Amino acid sequence: MRILHVLSANFFAGSVAYAVALAEAHHREGHQVWLASDAATLPTVAGQVQLPVSERSYVQRLRNIRVLRQLVRQHQIDVVHAHSRAASWVSYFALRGLKVPLVSTVHGRQHLHVSTSAFDIYGEKAIAICENLAEHLREEVKMAAAKIVVVPNGIAFGEELKTEPGEFVTGSPDSPSTSLRLAFIGRFNGPKGEQVAVLLQQAVPGLMQEFPHLRVALIGGELAQLSAPGKVALKQLQSQFGERVEVVGFTDDVAGWLLKTDLVIGAGRVAMEALGAGRAVLALGEAAYVGLVTPATYAEAAASNFGDVSARQQPHFLVNAAQVALDARAFLRQPHRIAPALQQRVRSEYSLARVAGQVLAVYESARMRLAAPDFIPVLMYHKIPEAPIATKHQIFVTKENFAGHLAYFKRHKISPITFRDYQDFASGRRKLAEFPARPIILTFDDGYTDNYTNLLPLMQQAGYRGVLYLLGDFEVRHNQWDLAADPTEPRADIMSEAQKRAFVAAGWEIGAHTQSHPRLTTLAPAAAAHEIAQSKAELERRLGVEVLSFAYPYGDLSPETKALVQQAGFTYAVATDSGGLHLEDDRMQIFRINMFPHETPASLFKKTAKWYRKYYRWKRKK
Image 1 (spheres, rainbow, N blue to C red):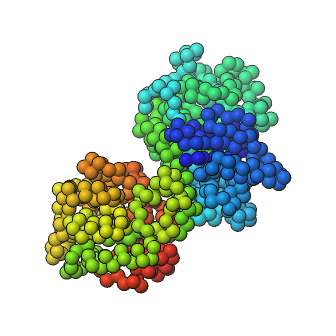
Image 2: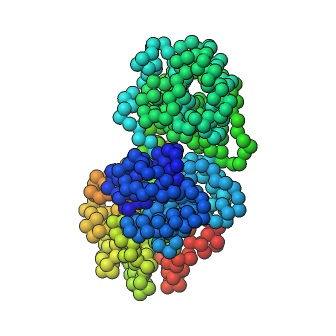
Image 3: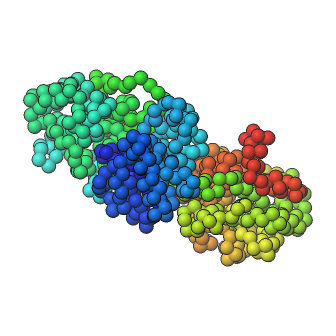
């Protein structure tokens, strides 16, 4: 994929580090990446173009728009990723009429004025770096919920962090082992500088007096912009405590300092890096003081980007220095390692490799939302018998009627594709110009024998392929879940392994439908996770295919089961009568349309129409 990042980089803020890290990660994966920013050079091997993105004059904005438009055309850019409102503004206008998607990462709260909500310049997708920002965008900016994706900043937890999870390292190589170090890490201008100034005045003197071996380090940029009261307090501390006050300023070796630090005060990226290195953190940001980050407080801390972001507009936040001193004192009296599980969780959730993958999926989603803006019908079939079945579950279409469905699709130039096909277009492996004008996805659940005897020949004759959702347990050879619920239901046999392989040979996509067809929401989390993940693993092992998509049995799902499906490595998941208006609204809950025994040309017209999902939501209220 060809990716262009646009960012304000008049100083090296967290958003700049995030963009550079993404560029490096995607470049390593073989994507072609460029960055357009204020900076003459950034620490990346990606292509760079200096552009005064931060300059807000309309003359310069017009110049920026012209340059970006030329870059997009020159390099045949597939997606533009903006990292500030100024970058989104110029990118939005630069891309007008080019059919190139725009993705914006929102790193902080947006100014709430009329143009913010009335004039949407964020593009096809907006990445919120924490849950509080997502709520802010939904509730205050009035952004459509389907457009927002929560993806945190990614951290390259470097090899220099040699500590094992939970290992406690204290003191620096040039100081006694009894020493302690408290470090303020971050920017020292703006609101964060105000917080540090208050603590230097009201909290640090008492701590340094109480703990004679305590060193206090100030690490980060814009130290010269510390407020006047902060500078006075710092000078007094240096005069009183000498070399125990370490004014480091900007450094490329934050990781090294973390290994020499016992307690970090910081927010955002700083907090993530410190926790990933096993350091204890007092999360203090522009919006809130969370306190010591523990397994119990982690979710609240992460939702606010460790104190930097409030979900709702609030009065100016000023830190309670007495509370910070109390919390710091409690830790310094008994320094301890952070919980190993917490360190591992941070390293997993903020892993750059994981985040880069999530962002790439957002790019793909933005591409497809622009290339295929209409609803794509996903039809749900089960049995394809020779004759009608005496069952209260109307989940069959006879062979004759199904042949009529295929003839209808042919006649109306409706083109069946699979999720694998869709993903090939989304990822750039296939050209979007080849995407069909009227796509449809035909799905078949459970893998009944009549799918092999009746369905497969009909589809092959039509030149179509579909998606077959199979159980991971190949010993399940009939619809035992139906009989368990109602013994009067007719038995329906499930294909053998050889018959399933015939679908693979015919180019069908194989999807997972759990191991044994349970209602996932009735299971304990561990059992549900096993049903989901094991089905993918078994199908891939037995059939030698990559399993990309998942079907929830009975359409039964919850936010928790959706998370388990995503964690298991699925790219798409289909529901039954729930889901978004567009496939890209939620790839883990894609709306499917039930197909019944007595479909007519009129019902086929309705169920394959671009407006059907909106009609269904209006009629059924879901």
